[in-house]
Every structure is written in structure tokens, then in C-alpha cells.
Length: 186
Image 1 (cartoon, rainbow, N blue to C red):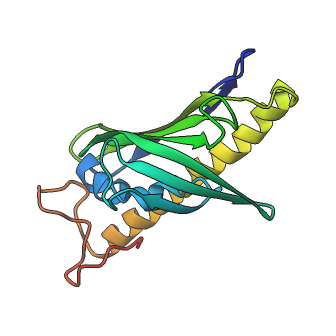
Image 2 (cartoon, one colour):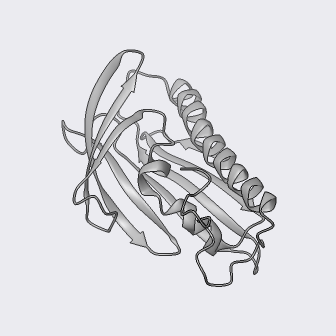
């Protein structure tokens, strides 16, 4: 995991998870946009324009922390089936206020039965009164939380598959549902 905040306040947080399941299997989980977008623990509520994730769809995000509530807006910037997506999280005061940032998930196949998940947050630290080292500590804590939540959720999915004797590679048929139509992490 890497977290950088440069002198101008440009933020770049990156993490890569190596997952012993096919990219197709992991996409079946990752494409649940609302669930994975909410791994940022500030995202208490989310409304997605039209209800279906797609490039260009508008978002309304409700951030909650320590008793405070802040409404924010965003948009799904990229949606590529089987590959990943990016979405913005912006202040209602404008695109250069309140830590404007973009969260991205991107899958990279690493063989038939494994893949890498790249998680990235890019943005601008706008609280100039906060020292850069303190911004770095805060972002490391928050981004680390996102990465741990995603890793834990995908480990649960991996255990669920193993308990049912499902293969690590996907045969092209949706393998994210049981016969009853339920998914393990829903």
C-alpha cells in the first residue's frame, strides 16, 4: 500500500491485492457498485441516478463521521464490465473544495485462476491548515481501512466458494450465485 501527498496537496493512494480466484469470479462481486463504493466508511448512504451503475450516472453520497453529516455528489466516471470502474466524490461547494477525489477499482487477470485488484484514490488535499504529515496519517488510516475491508470481503467470498467445492477459475457461467440465487457477501 502506498499513500502520497505532495507539496501542492495532490493525493495518490494505491494498493494491489493478489487474489487466488479468476478475474471473472471477482468481477461478479466487485460489480456490486453500492457495496464496494461503501467500503469507504464515510459513505453512510448512497443514491445512484437511475439505480443502475453505468458511466455518467450521477451519485449523491452522504458522509457521516463523529456525529457530523455532509452531503456530497459524484459521478461514475468509468464503467468497464469485467474490468473495473471509477467514481468521483466531490463537495457540493465545488470541485476544488472538501478533498475532491476519485476512487477506482481495476481487475487484472493473472492467469486462469488468479487476478490482481488495483485500488486507487486520487485527489486534492484542500485543508491547507492541516500539515502534510497529518494529512498523510489520516489518508493512510482511511485508505488502509478501505483496502482491509475489500480484502476481508473477498476472503469471505473465497472461503464460501471453497466450502461449496467451486473451482477457482470461472467456466463462463456466472458462479457468484448459489442455486437459491443468493450471493455469500450480500
